[in-house]
Amino acid sequence: MTQTPLVGSTFFGMDLSVLADRFWMFRRRVSKRVLLLEFGSASLTLAQARYGMDEVEFTNVRRVELPPGATERGVPTEPAKMASLIQQICKEEKIYARRTAVVLPAKSAFNTIIQLPHGLTLEAARAYAGNPSSGLQIPIPLQQTDFDLAPCSDHRICANPQELQPYFLTSVPQKLIDQLLETLQKADLEVLSVDLAFCCQLRLMAAEAASLKPGQFLLMLEFVRECSHLSVIASSGPVALFRLPAIREFPTPIFEP
Image (cartoon, rainbow, N blue to C red; front, top):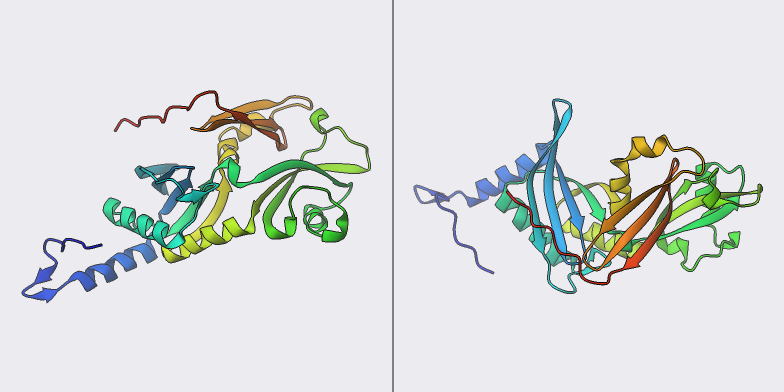
């Protein structure tokens, strides 16, 4: 791929492109802004966030359509190519942020309710769930995933014997996480966080969820092109996720400038 030389890239015959690249790298190293990346089935959404004056300012919002096969369950299949695309967009949009927060679609993760012995701390519960000899019966090997647990007790949807404690399990295959980290590394980005779409949406309704009483739930719907995701939310967080097949393709929203 060839690029047209930048106007004003020379000064009395001296090539200033190297100096411009060094200035670009310096701006990225000192930037306090955060690059936001959201991977979808067939798109990549970017934005830059900056906190100031008790509010978060979002700029440089851009969505790029991706060719078929560019992502696997929302994760880049070819890290080098995706990294090059991200760098190109950042230069075009003059996005200097290097610290990066990534959002993955719900289909990147396996979610379910598991029952663990009562009285465990969250750290002990993670160790128990990740122990191959624990006898935990789920259809995936947790040792090959990056997983998290959230207790969801005192809700009728999680009714169980007193000696067991229900947890909401979220796990992403380590292979996908490795591909994502390789992409960000090749793009010279620093990872701040990797999260799932429904978790990010849940934070917007955290106050409403915290006020729920036992037996009360919120329903959250996410419409995407190929399906709809239904999340059941209790005061402690999500307790169930369902994927609803689409009867027709959901239209892609058009963003007006």
